[in-house]
Length: 266
Ligand code: NAP
Image 1 (spheres, rainbow, N blue to C red):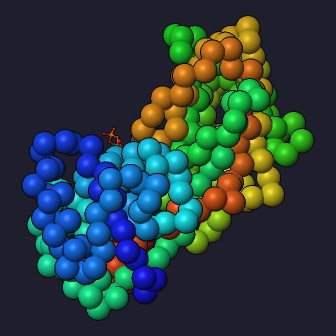
Image 2: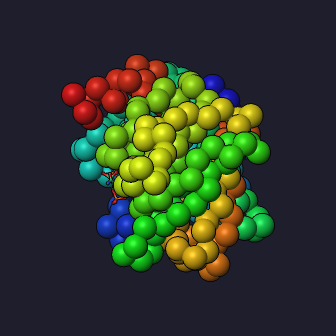
């Protein structure tokens, strides 16, 4: 295992998780991995909570690709990005002592709204109409005009995000070893005037997606990156591509994406 020296705890639930953080800090001291107060100095960034907390830990630390993220659940529920449970703190200690973990690399999506600096997401990007009427946009794959969309909006997910919102709207579950982003329609209108593909599709890193919003229908669509809203006015263009940036996570060896998919859904 890489020689980790420092750990930062991201505990969004404040006082509720204070005791957990103290216990975890003592555990890592025993492993000669010491708690730091800034995520920038940490070799390990540990979230305390569920997938939502993990997503926030990654976002708040700016999608660092030179450290590892570690999810530790405060409850006994099963999560996707979170392999360890505070209630089984012994298993966590043993996994570090025995070096019984893998580092997995998860793809992220780069999102550019208008010509602003890029942002990233680990689960998905969504764009939806902010008004009661439908939103229209032209969708390009690379420079190729692919379709004219009329409907509620669009969702673009990573493989690890494919089990989240994407799955609820009929998208496929995608193995994270398949480096791709999945485009899924949200409430598309399909009739003799408007026609879209009507199914989800996957794009690889060489195929960026561009959305050109029809200003006459909605200039202020609601957009999100994972569990945060983006506030941009006058959205005309959104460019998405599978990023070269990966998030590295510490996982138990016998807990693959498909183990988790089976456990959570079947
Ligand atoms: P939330 O609205 O409080 O919870 C959404 C639920 O989705 C939670 O149970 C969360 O797990 C779970 N989740 C998050 N990422 C997942 C993933 N990759 N695979 C499977 N389940 C996942 O929001 P949140 O906890 O901050 O999570 C944000 C995510 O919620 C978004 O990125 C989106 O994927 C998802 N979401 C889903 C819907 C929907 O299905 N209709 C609508 C909006 C958002 P934990 O309990 O472990 O946090």
